[in-house]
Amino acid sequence: MYHRDDVKKIWLNSACNFMNEDQAKNAWLLIQSKYDSPERSYHNLDHVALGLWFLEKVADRCEEIHLVRVAYILHEVAHDAFAGDSEKCCVEFVKRNFGKVFSDSVLARICQFILATDPAKNETNSLAEQLMHDLEFVVYALPYEQLLREEQKYREEYFFKIKTCYYLRRLEKLEKFLKQPLIFRCPYLAMDYEKIARKNIGRLVEYLTGNM
Image (cartoon, rainbow, N blue to C red):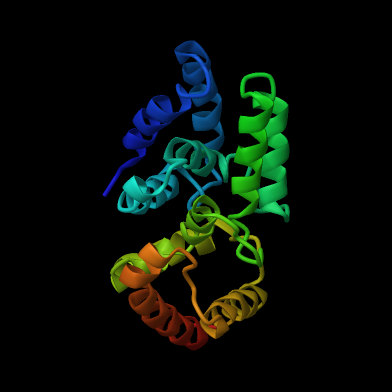
């Protein structure tokens, strides 16, 4: 598994394909400060490291892997538990803070990839977009006890939500995942993780139902 310290190394390695080293280092300071906000118990660098670890398993199959890594590291940079539409907030943050660093074409592609992480997005037209979408679900492919710990972190981040309301909304989302023909859209991830993720989500639904 990757750890939070690995995220910086991956950022510098991939971002330097699209900006110079000083720009990449300065950008990292801003990125790290956002992810290290004290209210982030789930959407933090540990969460990003987990997704990057799964991404590396299929990295050799993706022609845009450096761009996907950069976009994934940025995809929750402006996340705010109190606000909705996290993906659009992150896109606006990236445009505002890195619009003069990335070329127009690179910026557009990064924003496209960030929007692909929205679980409600119906179309993912490329392998890169499929990967961005699926990395939001790899947490469910973890060993079940580890998944429960991640779920607790998620609940802590949304501490301000009334317990019953939180669980009802969470259960609604998880049950919607189970109704999908496939949770994973990338065939390489689906082949390895679809079955275990579906089983774990089912167990998680039972657990949350029993704790309402």
